[in-house]
Length: 195
Image (cartoon, rainbow, N blue to C red; front, side, top):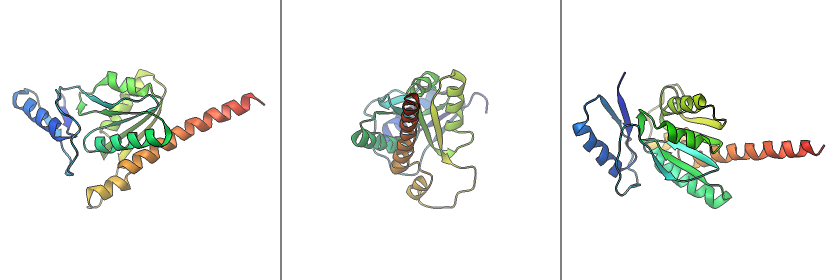
């Protein structure tokens, strides 16, 4: 819908700020909210259309996500750092439309991007973010995680997040696979240059 603003809430403070903004917002506004209880991420923030938050800084890769997936990405980034030493950025794209193009371009500079969403992989955060990154001309490894374009059976949210690899374990596995492919390519190039 033209001129529609789309927000997705990732914690209680963000919910409070977005709902307060909605009281005086003079354009169409859609707010997405998960059904699962989430941990608090923010103390005091200010939200705006086209905004985002870098929850964790990182240079080796980036999780671009929104809503409940942000808490999983935070845990995944911490575990990856502990297990591998790699620093993974966590970017909370609470404003899906309009979107923070500069934050997406900066995340793409890490070279390894996973966009994770509690949504169909077509037409959501993944499609929007991937388009921005592609149009920027930045070369990066990129994978979109979410619900494949099919009907999903009724089940507990935690089960479904695991099934579609958008929980902590799924995000860790996907990012480690991406990082390993980069390492393997570098090793292959290095070995072939010595032949």
